[in-house]
Length: 354
Image 1 (cartoon, rainbow, N blue to C red):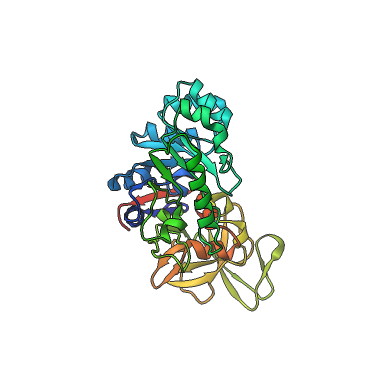
Image 2: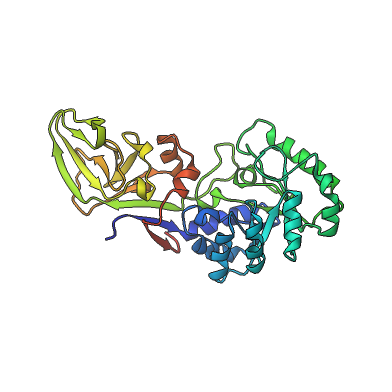
């Protein structure tokens, strides 16, 4: 038995992708950050069955990793690139997202190729301002983009921002010398809240990996990730004795403590100290004390268990389930942090259909 592992249900991932594909003309799955912690190559190969238009990544290195693995579909790099990265992107047949005069000119200087125009409609992170894209007109006439896109900052909220950003995006598209063949706006939350997209491509991300967009979403994903570790030690506590650093957990009466060989260096966050839960033998048990770099302790008082028994930190065991969202809420974290924080020290087990 390995020290600790994360199990990835590729069948569930593929079915989540199919639920998104049913809402769009063409699918552009995001597999950046190593497939949101699940393994980008395995995720891409699983999603190939859906015939996606391409894949989205954040860096040239991520794109090159997919190319080296034999992925031939289009790959868009969505983070702005430095000039030194553009030649590597072109050599690897990657499609950059460009949003400034200097970026577009530099891409043209490499010999160019397909690219997508990033338009900022309110995120204020990257891209050409929606009301100033006309200033790029000479460059766009010389090297027209294949696509144009924007990114919603609050698609999971009912605050009116999403329709306002779409309105701005339409104004920006009207300022271009010609409307690009492809236009895309929607992330997971936006796609989950619509029955059918009106844009060319849909860019689902975290939905694919099992995290939903709230009760207002029209579709919910299947769980994809299960995080497990075996019990490696059991010991008793007398009344008043403490567990872990700073003695933040003290026994009230006699207690039984189980130690797991997983900690924040594996991605199980310190913020879950005295707040998170695990499932042992089909029963929920609390985290006892501070989560350390390599070990996490559970209070298993009254729960039959032995060294070698498996504790589930994310996922289902029997009738109990701990979702990624529940872990995030327990540690005041984002579900994105939970998934992408699952470190390479964990053994990954990709299963066709768990």
